[in-house]
Image (tube, rainbow, N blue to C red; front, side, top):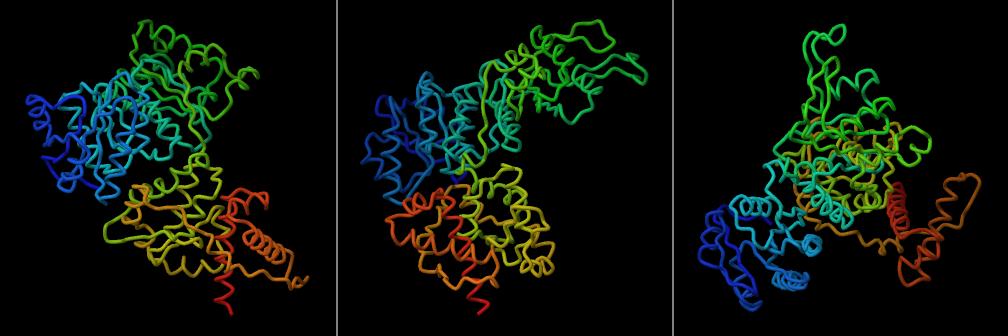
Length: 503
């Protein structure tokens, strides 16, 4: 839900301390017209005229849960800003997990903080936004939204924003394509150094002979072709953050120099003599097991302990399924126009949720892009989801590709994006598929091995569904996960519809 332009009409519920006149004036200057309520009954009476709610929490998030239940019963959800004590980080995290749009320190009254909070609720609506504002406000770009909807992701984000306030080196671990650079930017934008530059280097993408010059720079005349001085990435990142991706690919002889720079917080350019003092936060990332690399003498143990003052692990996309649909929405919304409205079928949603995503977010982006190319009627269905190479495109989809207009291939859907971003789409109930799965006993060699296996699998799944009380029990009987069962049932629905069409 989007809030109107200033002033924003918000209810103020603080059971412990009344809102003073000076504080109310300060809020008005930030663009918030606060109307004080003292009880839930008053809140219920005033809620239909409100655009938001500011709520004080103490000890737990029970009051937030009660308020959200009240808003649900009234069918009038509004964004909620929670106020908590600075020491109560666990309550702030729990409030964000519960659905608060923003969390502020209890004693925070500065204009920038409240303006930032109101901006977050305006852009994010009632979607949970893990943006703890107890620390100094970062620059405007820090409020750019990131997709952290799954509980595991929200916990990670809350921890990252806490770590961002301390001047320590951070090591990000996680599989390729899982979003380590996104988290590195969150660390930067949530830190006191958010006003400074964010500079990144992929250590695997640079030739070995160039990495030293890229990192530490050189003086004029340091080597043949050095016609002028060059500031390395450490100097370019002064006052900000240096992100070193694929740190395990850094040559061993440079690891020793990097360690010294991190210890001394100074460097000397190639061919130079002057010590340059550094004020840079270093965030490193890897998709490998660093302890194994240390055992194989591919990575220095002392550098590992210098980089890993605080370790954060980014889970694979399959381990945070709550992020999948919102990520799909974000990918399509970035390229969309308001003239074209795309929809995602329930079956396609089920397949997106059940697929294991070995390529993580990068693979998801590829799948979404292919679906946009193949979709001609603005409805993305399972037939448009290609989880392998383009060469595996089914024959029946080729005519759609040939007829697709370029404008359609590059369009996006805004209505589905809004629903996905607000996590309103729910998992499709596939239990109704059982009557549509027609088992066949007429096995024959002429039908081929693949067809016979498919028919036998359908028969076993239907039998399991008919003899158990739930799909979870059926999946347990079959020895597969409930997610795999849903995926297979969705495929059988498409298969059965294809047979019906052909007959």
